Length: 189
Image 1 (tube, rainbow, N blue to C red):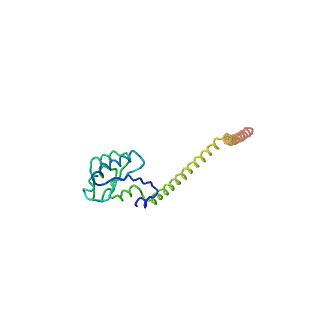
Image 2: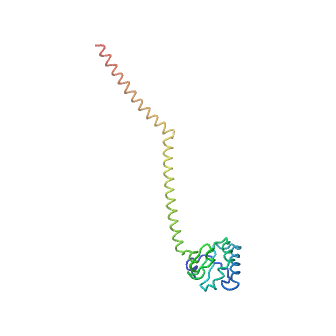
Image 3: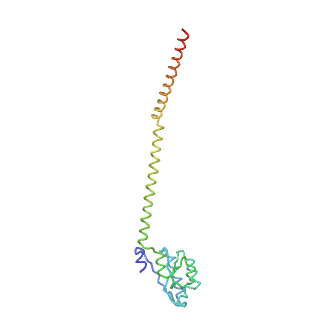
């Protein structure tokens, strides 16, 4: 129920096993081993409802603890009630307080995932917009550099410099001629 309520698009694989009684230890180990051989799950939830210490004892067996520890698939335990603690809980990748809590840990609410995806989409769009602005700025700068360094542009700049120099030379020579003319007139008189 929790899985269907929170995220009903997932595929749920059940490895049925006894979780109480004489053969429970062997059956739990076999189920974990089968899941690891099949590799059809991203995570395993090892759970059962509450019970007495004797009812939960199979989760304290060394062989179950070793199978959990050696599992290549992460295992979350949700065994018993919040106050129950077994050796299986201690060697698992994560301990949930209850079976429902284990399902809630594995699967966030679908709306939460959709909200996170929406936030990521907004961040990605902002990043792309900034990247486009940066590229546009670089293109404008490079275009400006190309125009500035283009031979026609450089020729125009040299032509302007030549005009300024010519004006200065013309002014200097006119000034020099005027001064020479004045000195000549003064020397003649």
